[in-house]
Length: 227
Image (cartoon, rainbow, N blue to C red; front, side):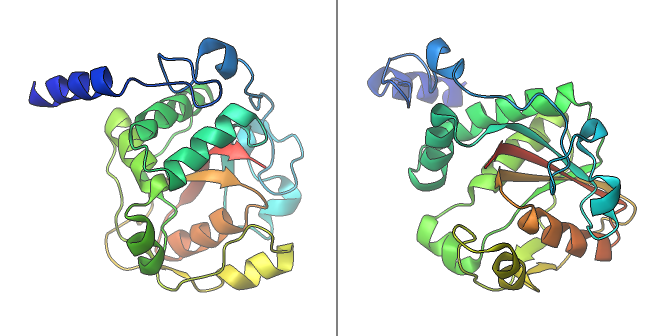
């Protein structure tokens, strides 16, 4: 009850406004939400060929640890890009529930089956600078909705350069040996891995390698946007 009253007071003083056009009401007004280009066809997360249910295609799965991924929309859709940046850098924590909700709709639509949820971790240095991990905020909301455990035993053991702007080979080298499973039992579990933006799939795949080495049976990505 106290939480609800607090939320009402905050929303009264600081009403939600559309991140794209400024209209009062919600983070996206109906007109701006309609501008988001959703990803309707299931695609391989690596080569982007059409692939049933978003599985890594036959060619890619021979080299990749990630079983597949579901992605909500295209990053270049201005409202979605603004929302992801606002959550990541703008400390607008209420966005985590809003963005988690649209990702939940995509997960349910694609009928993903999983036992446990985790998110792509950030380094201790980045966590100190930002104060939070936006993918963990999303993952915890999604885990609570599906009544699944949120796995905390995955960490980023070393600081790396931002992946943005790096070439494919540089991305792979940049992430090598940066993720570690430190605790917890995920043996034979189907893991749902949450992230905000998918570019080449290098990050998701590197995390999937570590999770499978720790015993995970399958690792699927669930991502807000694809570049």
